[in-house]
Length: 178
Image (cartoon, rainbow, N blue to C red):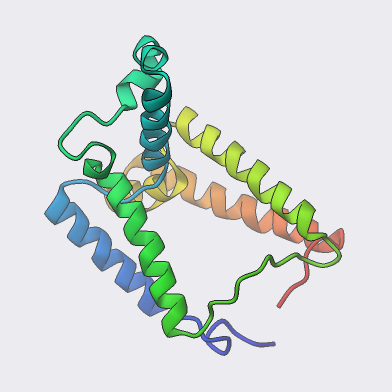
């Protein structure tokens, strides 16, 4: 069985230490943690405000999230962070020679069903993140680092659920290991 390191991925211990150091630095320098859902909420609110300002200002949820500070949308910490994450991911993949455009489908799954499942799952995760007032990365990383009780309850449940679902899908023939 090939390991992640054999396939050119970073050592998980070093990557975890690196992520911890980045989180520590971000909290010390920016006074905020890491997360992603706030960037999507701010972007969606800015889009609604640009197209239909009366609707944006008339909706309590949207109006609170319209970027109003210096720089507008690009003055929002989480938007800048998410752009940095995307650039960092591209740079890392480029360094490891892993940039291969395409859609990976598991087992006998079609590319179309893979895209539909990814979009649907992403929409559900985004909606859940907004209902929970934050995303899994913000809760798991920042909340965990700040010793939040909710985060420390959430982390084992999220990982346990992921392992359970993966095992059930693998048993049903939906996933190919490796």
